[in-house]
Image (cartoon, rainbow, N blue to C red; front, side, top):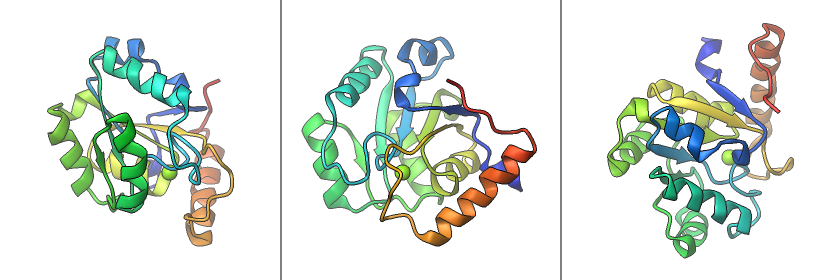
Length: 171
Ligand SMILES: [Mg+2]
């Protein structure tokens, strides 16, 4: 059961995910979370570094879709100015939005990775769909959108995984 929450990879932030490396592994699509994965949850727009990272992916022929549980107003305001396809109110970890994103990008499951900062939504949801999952450390430590219950459950799972030696962070 616990293994369903275990990401395939851990990285410090999205900048440690390189377009060339993904390409070499045959990855053609990225489903990425928004809040605390690309930018801090309370930052409305993309940073120049994120724009550059996204452009790098596109130049390598890798499609990106932003899939967020946040509302349309927030996700649209972030995604539209940088012309990124997005799905808001995604209801992760439920499967619908993941499947829609894969269909939207025209990729196969094995060619698609999921990036996110939360085990309970991004990683669990991606794993359930049989997608390769990559966990990042949350950009901001305070997140008003995450409930205390979720945060506690997340720490509990993380601690269990760590104790079993299943978790390590790549520098
Ligand atoms: Mg997030």
